[in-house]
Image (cartoon, rainbow, N blue to C red; front, top):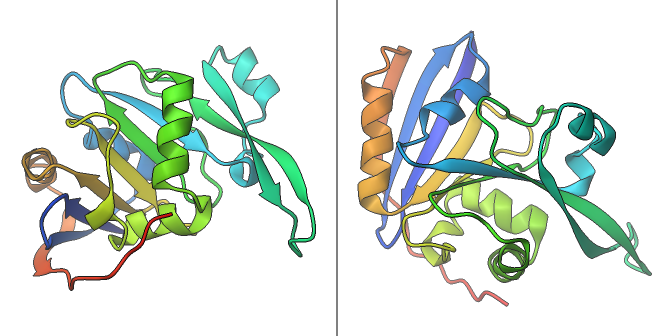
Length: 203
């Protein structure tokens, strides 16, 4: 069985909740389990991680998406190149195949407009790798601003989709945790703790 580690980060609090369990089910089943009534999920996939299902295949499968262009420094930082990230639009039951990488899932009741999303993304996650990874671990969640007040986010561990962080308002986090408590999971454990205050200066 695979070991799952879920980290819950209620915004505007110093409380953190960790849930551990084991399962043979794919991680996408438990990402789906976090979905509350009335929500759709958008999936942000960075260029480096978009090899599992190329654009042509998305089109063949009739998966809606937006192309997001950004400049990225080359390996040695001597020049820049333009890369294409993907914003996968909601489709029931579809989760972009995982190989590795920090995937970002945005759960919202609203329709996301591309220009607004790019503006928010550049402000909240200027370093796509580091800032999304820190949201998974919780170090970035204390300073996170959501596009809409009742949105919530999932950020995956770079190496294991079975490890992900959930960030949102405390009452939303409580509802999601309640679903996991009722799910009859193997070797289920829940631990609450207080996050140490950190200094953070977002660009």
